[in-house]
Image 1 (cartoon, rainbow, N blue to C red):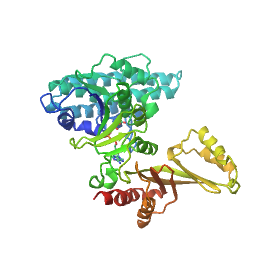
Image 2: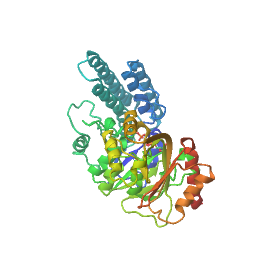
Image 3: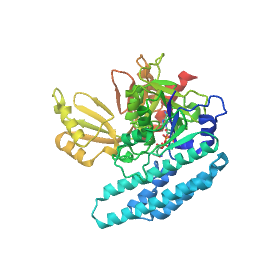
Image 4: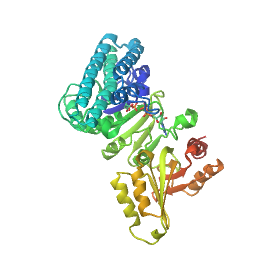
Length: 463
Ligand SMILES: Nc1ncnc2c1ncn2[C@@H]1O[C@H](COP(=O)(O)OP(=O)(O)O)[C@@H](O)[C@H]1O
Ligand SMILES: N[C@@H](CC(=O)OP(=O)(O)O)C(=O)O
């Protein structure tokens, strides 16, 4: 049995639970090797290195690119990381060894950043490529720190453990992410020791550049497919739940239990943060099941995502959505009966590299939901130049998703739940495959909509 398991940042901060309940001790029941752990940085560390994921408060990287004092931000980061280390000494972490490792990385990174600053000032090299290298370099410290500590704690508890450092810190070889993973695992036998790999992988394409935050799930999914794992497991702060526990409350968030990769695609499309949008596809293609477990409920089997699962009863499994979208509508009376009208609009979307989330159409209008971050004023101007009316509204999208929702009344129930709560549906869509009903609503109503849909479609059936 070989499993590849990712441990999220919030769980890493509670390492006593990871050690006792997830990894265990050689003397404890059920302990086994054959496990590769891919670890994220401790929660908060990447925020300090780059910028806060939610509030965007600047970290070292943002200060560096703005020409501000990044060195003291780096010192603060080091202080915070060493404080985290202190909390683990009672678990067996060797303060001196772990401190020396971290200090060396931080000192060397400062030196790299200083040189980069000089190169940018010289004007000989483009800023963007230097900044993007700095972002990669800084991000890698978070996972190097947590992976190094993990191996140190495991060894000090009599557990055989090997570090696979994918950050390539002093490695000048130009390898892609997949090549580095392949090379690093060449002489590793996961059945002889617990393997701990950094969630950050250095590669010529740049894991930050390609996948942005949450990238450790990309490393995880690439390792799982490379090693042909029997199962890929993500250990997280919450179960994969019927709705975001932070919105509906943990008591109303029902663990999904089982679902399929079709549902995972729907979640990826709206950027649902519980799984990185690009992580599940390679696992699906390799026919590896993905299990999402709650670190703090170790005996609960969690949720298994597989290729062919169809729920035995028709039900909504997940309510998800986003309040970071806009709806764009093209209305033109010349559209009716015209062939290829949509094609011209799509050519513009392709030119701007925009993938839409939802599309609905009638005789003379086409509505598209896209990420607000993708909306370019010049695209709107181009559309306005060609079509009668172009409307853009900031909005939110809520989706009711399930592997088996093809049943009468379900759409009516969802619409009714929104109506009862005075939430107007601006636009609606459901494809023939019937796995996802999508509603565009007023942005201010987003949380209320998630709460009432979860209550009426998931919680009411669960009680
Ligand atoms: N249906 C859902 N089930 C579980 N979590 C969800 C769901 N929808 C949104 N989330 C959010 O996803 C977040 C997980 O974020 P992430 O940064 O990946 O955590 P971790 O540090 O465990 O990797 C949680 O904070 C939670 O609020
Ligand atoms: N630490 C990185 C990578 C990651 O995947 O973290 P987490 O598993 O905590 O979302 C980040 O914050 O983006």
